[in-house]
Length: 55
Image (cartoon, rainbow, N blue to C red; front, side, top):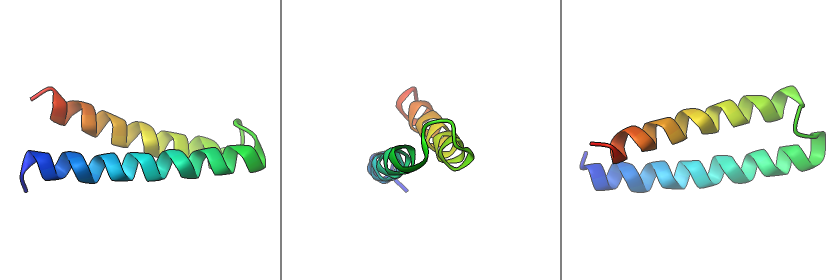
């Protein structure tokens, strides 16, 4: 897969995960385990995006 396609897919996933995290945080609070889990998933996506951008 081309790097540009990967970037677009990752950006979509990042934005989706970020929105999901905000919804959960609003419902449960930022320290709730579900919110922390989504935050960690978001961190993983952001790290992947950063690696692709640094190539």
